[in-house]
Image 1: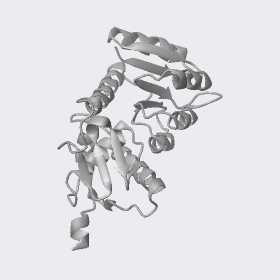
Image 2: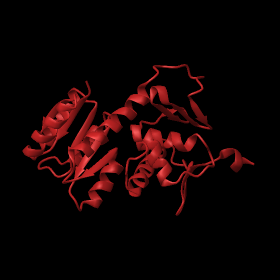
Image 3: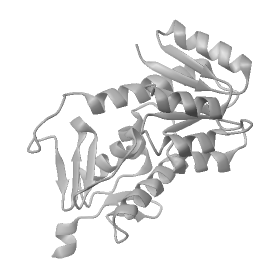
Image 4: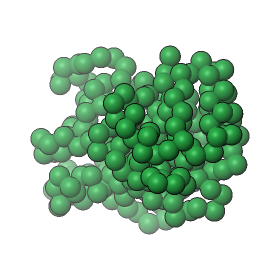
Length: 238
């Protein structure tokens, strides 16, 4: 039974959404205050968190900033209808997805299922030797999907599930351009609608994380109006 944390200062949302999730078989923890949620979630980590952005005392953005120092668990933001800036800020802070209010409970449940399924796929297969065919090595980059491990120049890079799936999709075929629709399919699955800006924000965060390890990192290339690609170092060297 997957554990879901639901954090929102709207009691009606807490009640209705928690009931809907429990009917789907999830164990739900509800919090109406960001500070309370931070204390609880750092003591016992759920499988996924749904956070409202607009909350008094500690809003969802601040809560996510604190959580990302300790955990890479999947996070979905609930945003107001016109809060485009907050949506993009949330993605750059490390949220995996966002849903605008008012929202369909069925849509939220489907997004939760998708994120949990992706997280489970990342964990599937147990620990494999470093020589496993599933391990991807591209120069200084090493990706081990079975252990959700990413390293650059021997240093661990802590990625969310979405970030890992994006770098994996790009690194599998260096030099090949992936458009945003292809990256959405790789990170979210087919038949899931995600705004193009969501992918752009995830890519920006990916670059930032790698540059915190190596300020010269430039392997993820942008082809404006087309998409992104992982630099083919063999071609560059030749």
